[in-house]
Length: 264
Figure 1 (cartoon, rainbow, N blue to C red):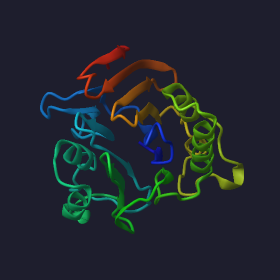
Figure 2 (figure 1 turned 90 degrees about the vertical axis):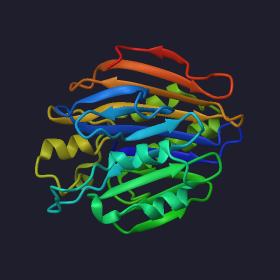
Figure 3 (figure 1 turned 30 degrees about the horizontal axis):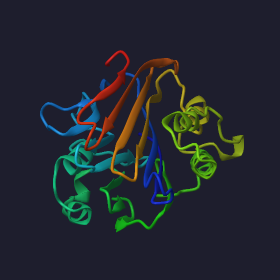
Figure 4 (figure 1 turned 180 degrees about the vertical axis):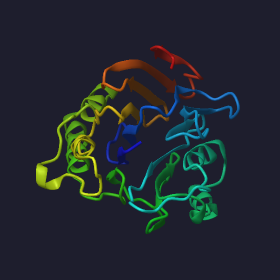
């Protein structure tokens, strides 16, 4: 997942709103968002290569997500999967700060992680941002540290702010933001990607490229009564719709799946 916008305690009816795109190589297998059998209570998509996930929620209101930090020349064959950080928090019971302090940063390649519950939101990175609780606000994470002013992050964050001010807080509005394929200006394209076509594609919120692209988009809204609405849209390598699922979690909703697409 390579773009996340989080609105935390800024809307009276929706104290938590997350809009996120997961970008990945098309050859890496993944399962659609579903309730995990091996970790009951965890709702997430799944990386079928390493077994972790990029964004997850739980029946008790815990949630977390991770993005990689884009860095050249730093590889580690024995690194643990960053996706296990997400499922580990969501399936557990440790308070957010205690969980973060227990993470062995050196065991993973570069990552950003956010994690929270109904009362706290934490951000951390093993590339220069120690674990800290965030104040109410609208935040953006891509493949650098929190709120690094990349054009697509700034544009998406401002559009989320606009929908909150206009009262259009709904999954469809968030998906519209995540579907933005507008590249950055030529002089602001990523300079650390050797492939010029990929650099241009990756500068957009929604990435379309033959080898790498936006595999799924997720919209999450938690109401003030604790009900959580989570929707996922999936895409093929050409950026065309390939499935959709939505879930409602809360005291009355149970584990209901309101709508699903192809189930992949």
